[in-house]
Amino acid sequence: MHDASPAAARELADGGREPLSAGLKQRHLTMLGLGGVIGAGLFVGSGAGIAVAGPGIVVSYLIAGLLAMLIMRMLGEMSAAMPASGAFSVHAERAFGRWAGFTVGWLYWFMLVVVLAVEATGAATIASGWLPVVPQWAWVLLFMVVFTTANLTAVKNFGEFEFWFAALKVGAIVLFLALGLLAVLGLLPDTHAVGLANLTGRGGFLPNGWSGVVSGVLAVVFAFGGLEVVTIAAAESDDPARAVGRAVRSAVLRIAVFYIGSMLVVVTLLPWTSIKPGASPYVAVLDRIGVPAAAQIMNVVVFVALLSALNANLYGASRMVFSLAERGEAPRGLLKVTGGGVPRRAVLASVAFGFVSVLLNLIWPHSVFLYLLNAVGAVLLVVWGLICGSQLRLRRRIEREAPHTLSLRMWAFPYLSWAALLGMLAVLALMLGDPGSRPQVLWSAVATGVVLLAAGVREWRARRD
Image 1: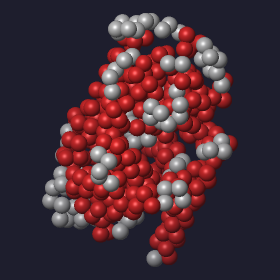
Image 2: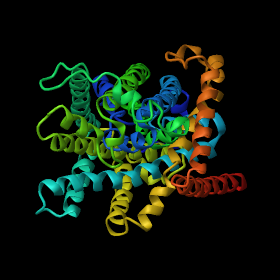
Image 3: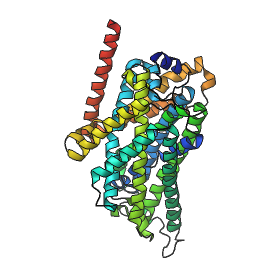
Image 4: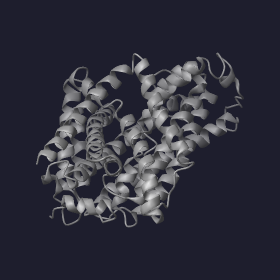
């Protein structure tokens, strides 16, 4: 093992190399970028959005997807110019100072290890339905051990897991789109062309008006979380700048096809009033067109999506805390790297807190863990907001100091960058006005305040020393 010093981290920020392995190939990053936009939030959580927006959920996904596209483009621009395992945490530090890198890095790590518990528990619930003889806690333990082992070996193992997970999810959504389109056109056995009846009937395309569309945005915007991991992973590829550019371009295109396309199929084939929150609209569509065992098929897809997210979040959390340690913002003991370039202590630290989160979820799901979950509920928007701010500040600096590194550029800079930032603020304001979302904003504000206080104390001590 060897140490990666803070000095090396500073050199990295100016174009040095990561001490981590360059074991991820372009196909890994491409599929990570594709699979990152297809999760359980799409397959199951979209039902809640349809319930409040009706067919207008297509517009809700269009708005939320546009925000995600802009964030990914900005993040891709900075990551291509300055690839680093800490990605947006490193960018925030370079843009605003150590306090910003510290804050966004620790908030993101905290969010990942808490959400990890939800994913592990959700996958265990599905597995327990298949094999009730095995208790839920045993499934959780198995999943955590398997993916911890995969992340402790070589980074290519993480890449292979994500490659095949993403391939299955992409295959499932492409097959769904193909079957759905054939059903819409009446080209499947025992089906007839449905026309626009479900889009224009039962209150019209916007049955709850634009307020329903806005509520739909709040219900679906967090489904786009996870796209950021591809820019973290790019630092462990042979050609980070080129790899992240290609992965971001493909992810942006797939957001439009997978999310908006599949939602259009759902609300065209089914009356929106028949879709219930918590139930998968995809299962309802497959039942509608006569696919046998539709619920079990979708259970398998959701199961894979949850395990994929668990694996990606554990990877992202370990690399983020490793990057923090590189820059002196986390304990130096986390800097130990194996000969194969794996930050084992960072992986173990992340999974340890993940295990604690899982236990809290299993023992106190409606009390202690609920507070933790609320505390990270709006953190993604804080992270995205800092990505916007960092890109606005760094773009001019990169143009002055290293214009040749701008291989991927933000569209219509700076106008769309400002539009994305205002979009984040608008979503936060809407969440504050929504009784169901308000606790997430308030508890996330408390979590952000605690981390900012810690950052301020560190800055004060550094000045005294």
